[in-house]
Each structure stands twice: as C-alpha cells, then as structure tokens.
Picture 1 (cartoon, rainbow, N blue to C red):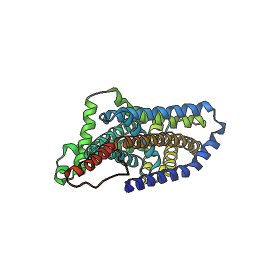
Picture 2: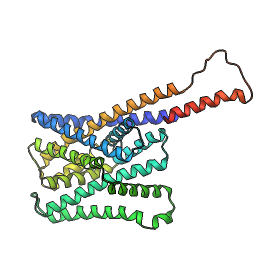
Picture 3: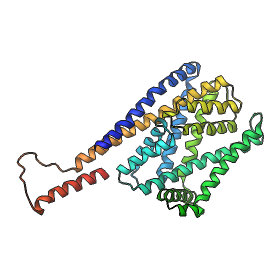
Picture 4: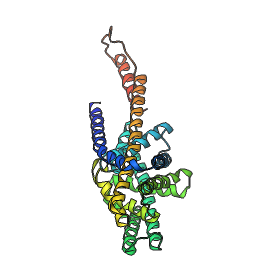
Length: 343
C-alpha cells in the first residue's frame, strides 16, 4: 500500500511539474494568438477533442474485456500521461499498464493488447507518411528540393513497417526465448487480426492522427500562413519524432521538432513558431485535463469499491480465538480485500 501511494505521489509530482513548465509556452501562444479570430481557436479545440474521442474508439476495440466506463477512463489516462510524462507514448503505455495491473489484468495481456494498439496507431502514421510523400512527389504542394524530402521519409517509414511485419514471421525471435518479445509479437499478430476483421472502431486510429494534424494545420492558417496538406502531414509526423526524447511533456523538443519540420517544408520561421506554440498549448492541455479528471474519478471509484467490499469488524469486545474456527474470519477478510482491489 505504501509503495503504491509513493508511486502515485511521484506521478502527480512529475505531472504537476510538467504543467508548470508548460505555462510559459501557453503564455507565449496566448500572446501571439491575441490577434487571431476566436473562431480559429474554437475550431482547433474542437478538432483536438475529436482526436481524443477517436482514440477512445480504437482503445475500446483492443480492450473489449474492460467495462465501458473503465475503458474510457483508462484511455483518457493514457492520453494525459502521453502529454505529461517523459517519453510520450512510452509514458502513456507505462501508466496504462500500471492501472491495468491494479485492475487484475496479467502482464502478458497488458503487453499484448498495448503493443497491438501501439502497432496499429504507428502503422497509421506510416501510412500517412508514405501517402503524403507520394503526393508531394507528384507535385501536390509547393516544396523545393522535393525528391530528398519525400524519398527519405517514405523509405524510413516503409523500412520500419517491413521490419515490424517480418518479426512475427521470422524464427530468430523464438531462439531468443524472451517472454516479453514473444508477447510483443503476439500483440503485432493481434493488430493484424483486427485489420482482417473490419470494424468501425478501427476508424479511430485515422481520426486520432488526422484530427490532431488538422489542429496544427488550423493553427498555421490562423497565424496567416497555411501549408499544403502533404507537407503538413510530413512535417507533423517527422516533427513528432522528437517527442520520443525523455523530456516531460515534450517541452522544447516537440516545439523544436515541429518548427524545424515546418520550415523544412516551406513555412516561414516566425509564423511556424507561432503556429506550433498555439498547437502545443491546445494539444497539451486538452488530453492533460481529461486525463487528470479520469484519474481522479477512477481513484475515487476504486476507494469507494474498496470501502464497500471490505468487511468491518468491531474494534471493541474482540476475543482471541484459536483453531480453524478463529482463522476463518481472517480468511474472509483477506479474500474480501483482494476482491475489492481487483474489482
């Protein structure tokens, strides 16, 4: 119990510190956005909410065994963790795994389901990367030096996807005899099976990526420098690679990655900086606030369930009893507490 509380406190401290570090970026974005039509801001916030709702759909598809309310809360917690904690997606998977372990799910199931979800959303990014590169190569969008700016990202994306798809079909991962690697392979196979059984929730992977890219595009248009869709998609996906660095909230590195990528694909530096600051303020706070609320609701529900499930015994008038009859209430108490923790 003490260890769990210490972990919770540590997570909240990191999250709170990240939020404080993000305030200067929010102030800069607000100052630069003071001359922007509020309708642009409303539209950007609406698109970010649509992106988050799309993630709820694809998450629910992979974690069907969870109750609907728990799945929605966990999805918000993972999105908030990805925005707040170092490592982006890695931090969100770790937070989600901790939550699921406390709910009683086995480590194997957590790794399989989480890796399958991660693979499918990553495959969507690769699809967008290759598609945008092809469109840019065909002349859609005004970008100079188009050949190296399209061939290299497309080649990297295709190489990564090919390696990921080849791992389950190779024999070398069996020779390593690694349980974790075997679970990751099962997760990739699970994602492939989901693609072979089309379901409307799978569209959530497209919406999760597409609506978030649209927020950045709307921010570029709001500061007076719209960018062609293929160049926008490439700049977004390449710029977000910097978010893999272990910096809380991606503060600094995400802005640098996105601004650099936008400039690389033709955006002027100053408008690109203003657009990225505006985008990151929205993309940071919407998932963070939603994740915080979901975490508090989940913690409250778990405490309430624990209080209801744990039997109460009077503190006064207890007698010392020996033998199996005296140990039976203790067994019932332990069983009740365990069931409350897993419920």
